[in-house]
Image (cartoon, rainbow, N blue to C red; front, side):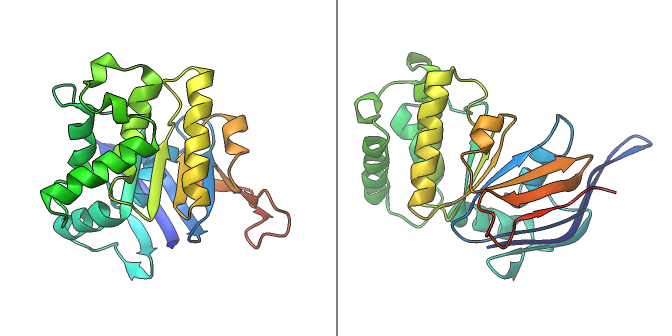
Length: 237
C-alpha cells in the first residue's frame, strides 16, 4: 500500500535549516499494523504527516497504492485523503459547538454520500463504538475516553483503507487507553492498514511491526514475527 523511496524532509526557519527526515525507505503492505517509535524530535510525527498527505517531502517519492502522489496538487491530495485516509490524533480535535453525531458527520460532508446515507453511516459507527446514546451530546459533556472514541468514529466513518494514529492514548488514563488500543486492534483485524506513532513500548508491542526512528533515519525495522519478510535491523549511519 505504502512505498517511500529515499524520502527526506527539511524545515527552514529564517536562515536555519533542520533535517527532520533523511533518506527514509519504507514499505507497508495492505493490512499491516505498524508502530513508529523513537525519542522526541526524531521525526515520527513528520513521517506520519507525510504518510497522510498533510505535508510534502523535500526529496524522494511516495507511492500510495501504486500511485505516485509526490507531485499531486493540493486539491488532488485532499481528494485522496478524503476517500482513503483516516486520522486519529492525541488531541481529539472535536468541535465543541457540534454534537457528537455532527462531529462524526464532518468526515462525510464533502464525500459522495447523500445526507440521508451519511446520517445512517454515522449512526452505524456510533453504535459500533458504543456511543449511540451520546449522539446528541457535545464533546465537553464526555469523558476523555469517550471523546477519543468519537475522534476514532470520525476517522473511520468514511471507511478508509489507511488509518493513521498519532499518540492516540496520550491524553487518556490507562483504562481508557487500553479501550482505544483494543478498538484499533479490532479495526486492523478487519483489514484496515494501521500506522501508529507511540512512545509506549507496551503499545508498540501490540503492533505486528515496529519502525524505530533516530535522528530522522530508520534505526530498526522489525516484524514481531521472526519469519516476516520485513524483519530486519537497520542501524543509522
